[in-house]
Length: 271
Image (cartoon, rainbow, N blue to C red; front, side):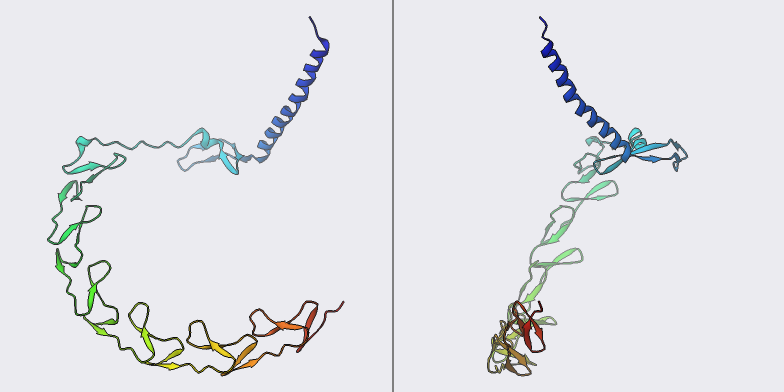
C-alpha cells in the first residue's frame, strides 16, 4: 500500500534537516583552510628537504603537517636487571639505574658502608650521618656543645643561644640592663620603652601630650584629636567653613556635594 503524502513528508524532512548539516560542514571546511598557513619548502640542518605544506590551526594552536607525518621517535630507556647491581644496591623507582641501600654511599661503581661516629645517626636519606642534638661536627666526629652560663641549645641543637634577658657577647651571655620605664622586647634580646614613653639614647622619656591630643596606637608619640591638626608641638583646631565638612582623614576640610572650593570657602557649583 502506498502513502504518497507520507513519502512526500519524509523527503521534505530529509531535505530540511540535511541542508543545515551540509552548510555546517562547508563552513568548517572553509574555516580550516582560512586559518591554515602555507609553509614553503625548506632544508633541515641535516640536509633533508621538507616539501611545502600547511600549518593547520585548531584550538588556539598550529599543527605542522610535516611534523605530524614524521613524529619524533624517543629511545626506550634500558631496564636494568637486579642481577646487574653491585652489592648493597637496589634499583631506582623506574628500574633505569641503581642506588645504594640505606647506610651505604655510592663510590664509583660500588656501595661503601658509612662509618657513623659516636653520638651520630644516619640522616633522613640514609646516605650520610649527622650529629645528635647537643653535639656538633668536628672533623669526622661529634663533640658535645659547650654551653656557657645563661645559655641554651638553639633550635637545631648543634649550637647555643643566650637565654631570654641576655645577649651574646663573644663566647658568653651578658645580662641586658633595662632602664627605668622600660621592659624586655618580645624576643627578649633587648629592651623597649613602656607605653607613654619614648627612647632617647639609653633612657625612656615620658611623652608630653599637648591639649587636644592623645597617645598614638603604639604609645611612643602623640597625635591630635579629630578636628585638630598638628602644628609644631600643639594641636590647632581646623576651621571648617560654611557648606564644608572634615575630610576622610580629619586633617583638613572639603566642600559638601553641590559646592566647590574657592580659597577658604565653599561656593555653589556653576549651573
